[in-house]
Image (cartoon, helix red, strand yellow):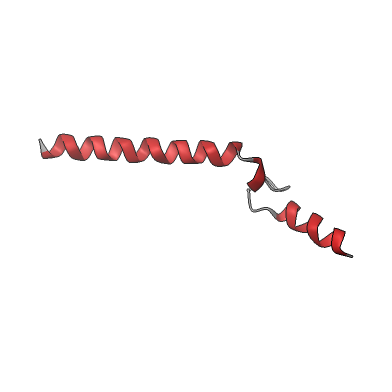
Length: 51
């Protein structure tokens, strides 16, 4: 019984992680110009408009 609960818990955590990664890849707000999602392109745009 304990093993089944542990396997189900690991499976649910893995599904949650995959869902989070999918959400992050589709989230345009965090998309940067380099493809890493660090937001570096957004930072360059905001600093160049301040000048």
